[in-house]
Length: 137
Image 1 (spheres, rainbow, N blue to C red):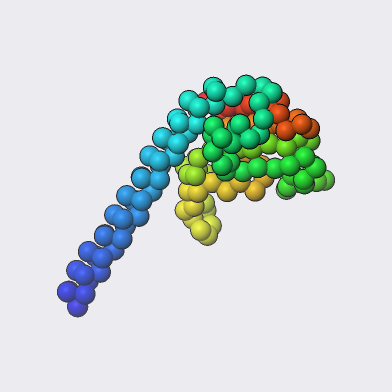
Image 2: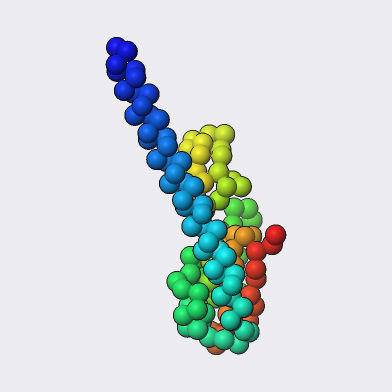
């Protein structure tokens, strides 16, 4: 019985260590990615095309088109006035812990549009950049 408990303790410790290393690695990747995006965003100007934005910044994490429904929890449904793209982090440490299941979920889930810490690019009707929003510090 002692051997089993010792094995279980080592196994549990190893699994926990691997999970922690994975989360730390993902957090470091997130920080590097956001820094890279913030340094590349200065290459974009108002009036640039969607294709140029994708060429410079890469594939967006979230995108929406004009007229698509913007999901809301309360009240009537709104629709996006402009199309756009958002770039942001994978991890969401500010909202990682919950009082009910799953208790711990540190990943960002973008169902309700771009987050406050995302880089958002809005386009006019001609697919030209009309506004760039940086994360608020």
